[in-house]
Image 1 (tube, rainbow, N blue to C red):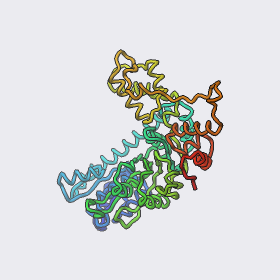
Image 2: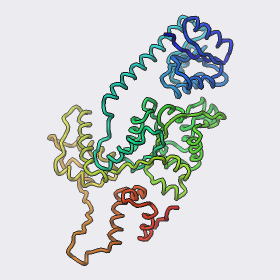
Image 3: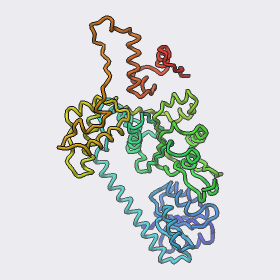
Length: 457
């Protein structure tokens, strides 16, 4: 079978000569002297290999290689360069090139390199096909927990993951929002594409725009080369924007436009670059509260909040605590090649009682500590940290025979709402969902009880 080659060189004569030589050797060649046109051709068709010159006026060959891989990460790119230094080879490999050849081109050597690249691509495609066959015959891996709250999350994901609609994941810190985002990606038709994740709170505001949209060479002091942004790198897959509530206000209009128009403009660049990625966002903040406080744009909120998934806190998940604890004990045992520990009845009871303000992340820390301390094959009370061991749960007891202890219905409702607020970590949208009322009703009740909150618009 003839292999298909895309040849790019901004010198038309050199491009035509190289294309003719490859065709004479049995290849099916598409040639262009425009790197921009080459990107369009990569988007439209699946080539066996791409051969590009390094030094071109419109776009550097290394940048072109990065952009080609952002569109199709599986096509091998071979770079033609006049340099023979180790630095040149290192730069080509860093850009994702499969190999490079030097000028003047030895056509026999080039044929060997291209044939090897094509064989590599076809072997990789066959491996992916076999892997997909194996995966399709097995149930996809789940997230630990069978509580009603987690079953509701799974039901929502099963219904919407393959729709392509933007998903907003909300939940406290440590509940596993990134695991849910990965689950969305695994269940979607984009699972063969990349899952690109970024924590908006972990990047300095001055750098976040460049990370998301890319930048042109010379856009700022350290911009020594053009850079492809994460939106473009996520082409064909999923872009996960974690802690989107931390996004600076001045950057929010640019993100909104990117989501609306499906194009990004790199910092310091003039051309807009289209992207094709499914957007999943997450926040530990109540974004509706952030909108009302003018810290988050309302139009951006509605753009990302097409489907909302609330990940329950560990306090809401009941017996999942013990399921997770046993799973983590087995995980640590496998890592240390030792038999998994048991939980003593007293420890199991205490783990169920504890409020878990740090959620699953805190539980994993507690189990890791207990694994290090435990002796005799069982986790005992002395193996737990002081804050867990000494925790005393609050009781809300309405069984009384003393008339003086009876409270009014309004006071009973207030105490119950306060308990649910604590359970949901103060997230009023989640509280309204748990109570089966709308947020306006919840705000009116809180205002009437002097909680000092403004009603939503």
